[in-house]
Image (tube, rainbow, N blue to C red; front, side, top):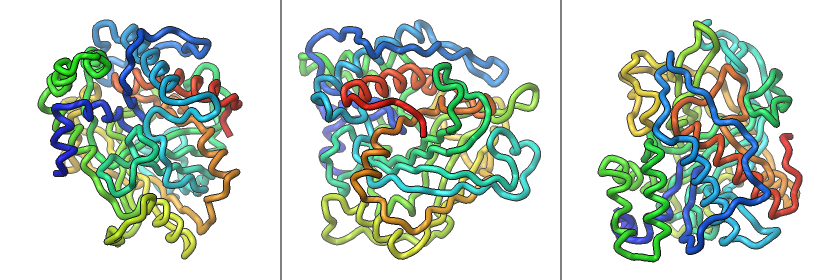
Length: 382
C-alpha cells in the first residue's frame, strides 16, 4: 500500500474518496451551501419492502443536504464554462459500442431490455474515480465504466426524462461500496468540510472500520487497460416487475483473460493510450453479466456486503462489442463529456434498489443540472 493511501485514513486526503460509479468528490467548503437555480426537480424514490428495501431516518432531507453541499463544491472548484463531474471527471475515452443480448436466456432473466436476440447501440465512458481530473493514471484509484444503451423503448423512471430511449448501467472495478447509512455521509461531509484539523481525523470513524477498509481497497487499484478490467455495479437493481421481479447485481468483464502489463515508464494518461492502441488494432469484446439474488439474507440496503459468486453465480446475458475506432476527436470528447449518466435512466424493470441508489437519484440530477448550467450546455439524452 502506498504511503499516501495510509495517510488517507488520518488526514485531509480522505476527502478525495468518491461515492462509487460517479459518486461524490468532496472539496473543503468554508461557507454554508445555498440553494441555486439548479434545484432538484425529481421526486424521492419509493421503497420496495418486498425486495427488502427500507428507508433510513431523515433519508430524503439528508439527500437534499448532500446535493446542495456538492453543488457548492463544484461551483467553488470550477469556473463557468469549465465545470466537470464531481467524481470520475477524467475520462480515458468514450467509445461507441454494440450490446447484443444472447439469443437464448432463461425466462427469469428475459426482462426489460434483456430481450433475447436484440441488439442495441451504446456509448461507454471509461474513467478514473478521483475527483482530481489532473491525476496521473499510474496513481492508485478506482476505475469506472458507464454504459448508455440507446434505442431502448418504454417509459423510463425519471419523471422529466420519461420519454428518453436510453438505459444506463454504472459500474466500478470493485464489488462493494464503502458506506451505506445516509447519516454517515452527512458526518463524512461535515467533518471533511470543517476548518478544524482534528475533525478531519474523525473521518475514519464516520465511515467505520469496515467502510474505511473498503474505501482504501477501492482506491488501491492499478490497471493496465480499461478494456481488460472487471467492473461491478456494487449496489443492487430490480429485474422484472410484479410478482416475478427479483433483486440482481451487474458486472462486466473482458471476453478474454489476456491482460497487458503496466508500462515500466507509464505516460501521464497511459490508460487512454492503451484504449486507443487496442481499438486501433481491432475490435474489443466484453461480457455483460447478471447476478440474481438467491437468498433474502443477501442485503439490498447494505452496499458494503458482497454477494459472493459461491452464494449467487453471475450469468452472461449480453456481449458488448467495441468496434475498432478513433475516439479522440474534440467533437466526440465534447459530446461524451456533455452526457449525463445515472442509474435512474432506466426502465421500471431495471429500477435501482437500496439507499445508495435512492440518494443517487437526487444527487446525480442536481450535479448534472449544475454542470450543464455552468457550461451553458443543453441537457438532453442522445
